[in-house]
Amino acid sequence: MATPYLLLVLHLTMAQESGSSSSDPPPWAFHIFLCDIKSKLCNEWKEEFTKTPLQQVNAPDAANQSRITYSIHETRIEELVQEVTAQCIMSPANGFGLMDGGVDMNLSEMYGGTAVMVPHWAGQQNTATCCIIDLDSLRTLLPDGSRLPRYLAHTPTMRTPKTLDPDDDLVYRSTWSILTSIRRHNMTLGAGDVRIDAVILMGLGTAVGRLPAKVCATQMAIACQHFIEAPANGNPDKDVNTSLGKYFRTWHYAFEIEAQVNDAVENGKREDTTARVTS
Image (tube, rainbow, N blue to C red; front, side):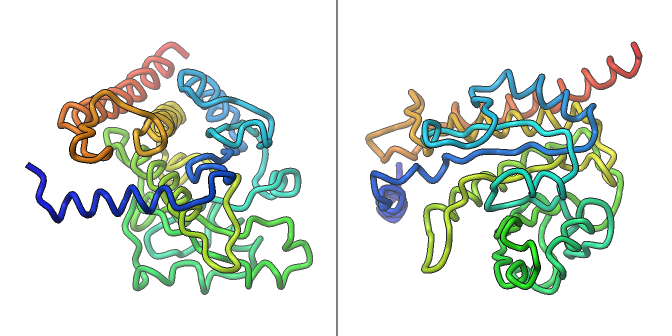
């Protein structure tokens, strides 16, 4: 039985989500640029994302503003940001924001500094969480700053550099955090903020963390599928108890999501092992 307080929270949540103009794209609709220099990961993305409801397009356009779309780019981040328009770029970082190696160092060099990148977590951000940081004050100081994404989705996959466990659903949780953080940003735009219409994502945990490409791609894809299919993102679900508010779901829904995540973890590991044995 839901308490009056819980029902009040549910109603306030529903009111907040319906607060944007009907002419605006929904906050959960944006384009994902999947970018990596490794052909193995790009090929795994192609295979796994074709299994999802996400539509593959070359770039975001007005005709697809009501849904999530994606494209895959086998190139360097520095080159992609000069070719496409994206308001946000993900940093698969460590929990202390020390951006002095790999992709993080490239991002740090592009923006010219790291001092303002993790001010929200008292110096240590939890793994698999996402913090959207406005870097406009940094990029405006750079000659080509207007081409750089304004926002950084700082998403630690490890506290300090280490090899990651392929049995963990860390990539799923990290991807989910990125997607929901962008959604929340688009729902709560303040004065001077801009909507995130497109985000650049890289492989999560595949560099220093040494996660297999199949493990990464499988978990990223299922997280995107769950996001696009979420009842909170405009998709009605038979397992939602409407008498208690449209976000009050039963345990069946929760266990179904849990089972699909566990399956994705196991399938990613199994397929990667099979590929390595037969190669």
